[in-house]
Image 1: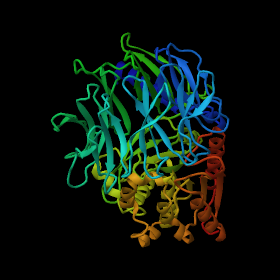
Image 2: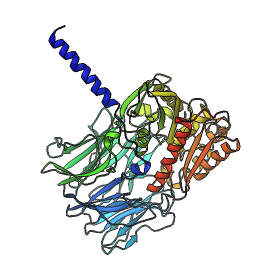
Image 3: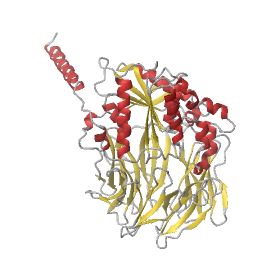
Image 4: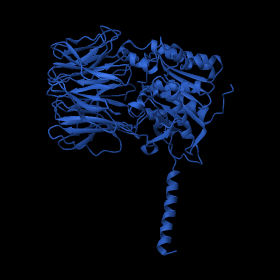
Length: 634
């Protein structure tokens, strides 16, 4: 052995020792209160002079509206709600602003105006009214909004001048169209009309002068088309389509000739595209393997605009100021929650405006996710997001959870999740499954769950459990399943239809009875009711099958511990869905815990409730999964 070889071996041995020490470095565990002191933020609207940005944050415990200087500095609180979470809409040119909130999570959002003297004005009154701000006229002398005040099933389109605040009806919807955009010259409105399935839709063009409604994407079979934006010259309508393709791409329709052409394709779904106010830039977002990729084009040259060099993460929520000089956006990473930035196109400088992560939490104690794929029972690749606890090893195996997203057509994506990081920080591996039927992986994959719920998508989750068990650092006897909304249904289905597979279940406002849920959907879901029925089943025609896939009618098979979380005001998954399955399990002396939130709807909008919810979940998992014994015989 040469001297050089001995030296190389010595260095290698030292490096192994160092890496072993690093791998065994203790990870600090944080409380749920510390995780929830990491604030959530969203929204962005530039003031008329580009000096500040309007946004919302739950810094006070619930969401309120704030403004922050584009040069950086302390944010100023503008609304002071202590009861309802309040979300930023848009600045008016004169400094007033609009915002929105509902009552206790009932999803009947109204549009409110905050006057310069601080008083509030409800612009869309009505006890059961649901309204949405949808954009500005090009001259910014008026804005557009939709409301279902006239008919709870449909959303009419209105224009409201900011000087009079007297709304004018632009389009009365009696069919079930979803608003897309209105041309700068106010001659055309683009709508989306959903078809027989969630993978089938058309773009309709309405001529305001002639009152003609025209389908510009007529097709055979199932093709998804959705309007995006008119160009600033009102010559083209840009839209997304997956005609002849697995993935959606950008196309445009010539308003003068009636001809369509492809503008841009990618190897993944294009999520959206839009122009800056005067057309200097066009923004494109691509859903690239559960990550958002942003592209910005300079329309004069057709070249890509360089994006700022940033820490690890993905850019989301892009918004270009009306002056087209600045861009607001959010940066989100696995170990870093969303932070608001502003980018100056001229200086190419990005300024960070917020610090969302609780300073008590060291980001080094959090974990990066890994995008993985595993084979399901039929050989289908299932894309998933894996979170491995630090210090997990073959010598120190950890419990694990299969996490199922909502939808059913949702997607588990990379990025910061306080619940996931909290669970991983406390020693649980988490695998976020994109079972068949998830969006983002092509239209064939997206449609693969239609009419198969309670079976194939569930079996994908069972295979996820098998994948976890083979990792070497997961205790194969301690794998549970967790999910919210449709994911909550999958939890209940797993415990009812595959009762011996998962050790525990965590159901967060999940469906237990599809018959009742489909019969009680909110009236404003009318535009996609038929496609929802195609996806899940018609409560009149498919009653027998819906009962067969509804866990409520099979609770006698649930033998593993279950915790259920529910918002009392949930209009989507009503309280009875959770009440009855909990009651049925209790009647059989099964192990079930129930956590009810009187002031929440379909999700959490208040920090206090998130703290209560996730602490209850961890306590349950520690008791029955990490430290518990088999209770199936109870």
